[in-house]
Length: 430
Image 1 (tube, rainbow, N blue to C red):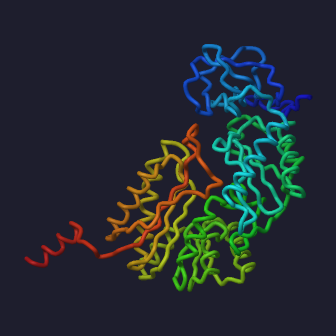
Image 2 (image 1 turned 135 degrees about the vertical axis):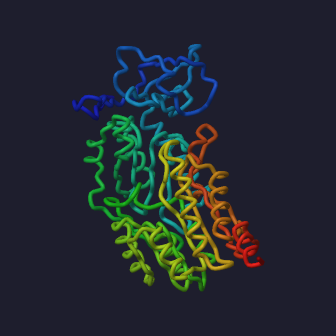
Image 3 (image 1 turned 180 degrees about the vertical axis):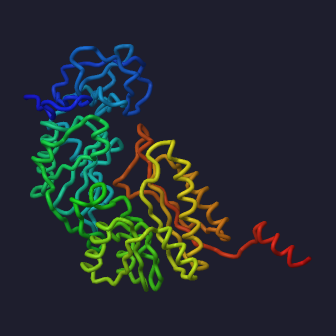
């Protein structure tokens, strides 16, 4: 098999990404392999001066010379090795076909994610054994989204042809994450050209609700499949309610709830393209939904000032911190947003609030939301703690893959008096 180069030249700082499926080279670690974690950082790898100046698939041995696995090596990344397997095997078409077939069986036959729906995540990166790679199925379309170097050339052809065998008649599309791949020194332009999304649009069905997926202007892979079961849960308890869907994206929660019998639904997002698609989705489903392209904080403060409140509020903001330095701001944003949302929920109404920031733990997020309730003069009766749909697993060898967490709670108001109110009462007595 020939090697396919993703880059034949380029600017300084870029590396040539070459797919080496024969794994002729062997890298040695500076450490003993005492962990099953799928990442090895650059400082832990002995990188020879010759033969390893580009990204490739290679065998890896630890400090003692013990075989550690086969992985993607990239000298341009702080994560120098991403393990594909702990076995001594070739990373060829047979490897990808076997792994993808196993994942299809898990997602469809064991988890039953194809029942009542024609969309799900087939590959969830490290947690599904293909680090830095996302593959989502949307009806007759499959979106491949690399987040790192190493999946170009013949490797991408192996993946695409395996998918075509497993899903006859599907259209394969490649759309790398630009920010992550630029940081990793990867250029997938040949793959984008070979497997283009163009102006393709998919229409998917999720428990009887239809959604348009915009591959050109949509976020991530086009639709947030991780919230599938949470949308279904919210829809099961909203009949006759006034609903507010904050950070609605293309209307997943709001439209599902309106179709399930919500009295009224207002959806808010700052992304005009998302709102445009959301309006199309409402029309597809014959739903009357109010969509507003406005800042959620601005809307909530105005609603609070006018005394406008809701029976059920969904709060699902985008990722708020990409690194630890951004965490303090993220904590404040989550706190302020949830406080305002709780203030706008009717007494005994419902709040379904989420964080998809992986660096924010479940415990910290719960603490932030509870504190927001206290500041809002309310308490929360937690009905459920939730995560993503099971097609978005996390692994014991990569716990960092756990990212989405949510709380479904009933908002109870005026149950107790805060110190500030006690001070006000004392003043009235004097």
